[in-house]
Length: 334
Image (cartoon, rainbow, N blue to C red; front, side, top):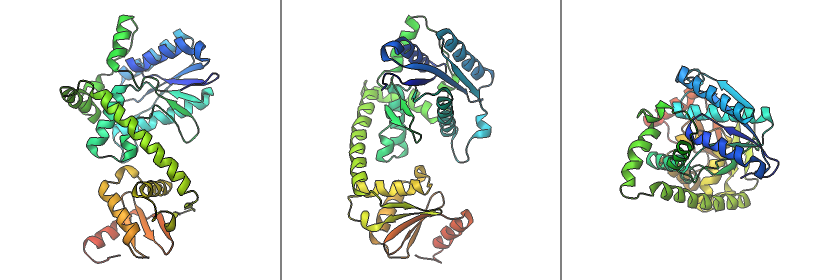
């Protein structure tokens, strides 16, 4: 996951996973030939308790001789409209990680995700309904849009192993009480659903992790084929995205879906709001609808079919709403 000369920023919350991670990387840094620094974020949701967590991380970093970037936000104020607290928190964290990496000159960001996090994520996405991309879970390593590498060195370790090690060696860590409340879906999966499934398969976490790994291999192959077959098919202008019809109608459904997904993302669509039903509607629209037809999708995206292209563009909320209402009453049928 790292190469000699890498500058690695370790994201540390104060919990057992990230504390173990920074201890492990600090122990290995000379052998790996890497430089380390730390960042920690207070989401402002738990008052003085979360402030004590970040102070703990700051003190731990000082003990190790590592630079630490610490920041506090009020997630209730900064939460993006339409996102859950968990989703907004994740967006804020990764924005903070990127800014911190730039500030310290790091080219790698390390997070403390474990096999428990992987199993929970895959199961949550399957329960809610997921595409292939979502079911692939948490990638062990990936690059973000700015070229920063994000790694999860603990992704094959169980949390229990980590906690046992820390306790046996007298290494302090912080415990976030909100991890035990049933308000958040992840906590329900962690404390109720996974333990229930372990009655039938004691290695269910490993099974879900392996499942995600197989899907990532399949997804990688699809992405390679997509890159070969759809190069130059998507054209983005100021207010819309165009996709050549001839480049997708001949493709297998798996490839066509991924090419359309890229077009929707380029048009700033909210992919998470697209259900399986929406993807079926898009497939039928591409293959069977006449020129001039249009299809409204969640997030204010309209898909229009021209003679040789599909066009994706944002429509004003009021116009999109009125279109849906008139269609529902049978006034307009395109």
